[in-house]
Amino acid sequence: MTETTHRTDVAIIGAGPVGLFAVFECGMLQLGCHVVDALDAPGGQCSALYPEKPIFDIPGYPRIQAAELVERLSEQAAPFRPVYHLGQRVDRLEPCRLSPPGAKPGEEPVDGWRLVTSKGTVIEAGAVIIAAGVGAFGPNRPPLQGIEAYEGRGEGQGVHYFIAKPESLRGERIVIAGGGDSALDWSILLAELADKLYVIHRRERFRGAPDSVAKLHALAEAGRLELVVPYQLDSLEGQDGKLEAVVVRDLDGGRRQLEADVLLPFFGLSMNLGPIAEWGLALDKHLIVVDPVSGATDRPGIYAVGDIATYPNKLKLILCGFSEAALAAHAIRRRLHPHEELHWEYSTTKGVPGA
Image (tube, rainbow, N blue to C red; front, side):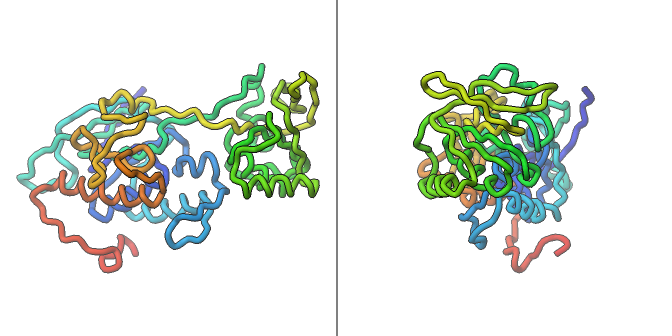
């Protein structure tokens, strides 16, 4: 493993919507950023879990798809030339002493942080913003024997826990398992694309939003999908990694075979802080405790914003995360350049590079 060392003003852990907006806010204050994310593309949960799902609480957008929001935020951050380190997690975070990039003559070095990723990349930064959302997350896999043989296939076949391109499922025979919002949302969307769509749930009542439940039953009555309830997954059938059928069983042990090309199990996510839990930060129920005025943690130079941060009366809304990113960026500017007076201008008067 070869170590590559980078020096920057701010290292941002997490490339979800709030992390991307933190790049913009830091850029407006002339702070350069490197961004690390365990996923292979920016966007966090918006890209990995529900790229096609509409979001309704972004100011100025009565409705915007999650994937489009990520695209817009990436475009907004681009003028500030962030450096992305994707497909790798931050394994170690340790203090170091350094002069911020662009430091003026006579400026004292600051206490910074050295990040070491799972790929051996080393980033030395004057400050760190943790925008890791729910932390490390992955799907809860159904306990089916031999399921691994069907995972990681092309998007139009096999077992998948995330859907990047719904259009790739057009004309396929699809089985969706689960009874929560994710299962309902994807059932409603894929009913327009699938050749045949089965929705399996172990209960007759679904746990999702009432409006989604009503839409699901309407689609079933119209023959656009079939509700297979109360049933649960029993086994998979196929050859050489090609899925041919999903076998389900009812509460009495009776079995039914559903011919299928794709299985989409939506049984929630397994979430944990991962290495973040070992960094000595004050935690409250697996969330990072911060000062609501600045996003500062109890370790100088480390800030947390978005869903991973907590304080009294915290609201887990994307727009609140955006505000927290702005507050953290201004606090970091004061930390890295304590003797420099900041003449703040609004973006409407200052503009952005290249605009």
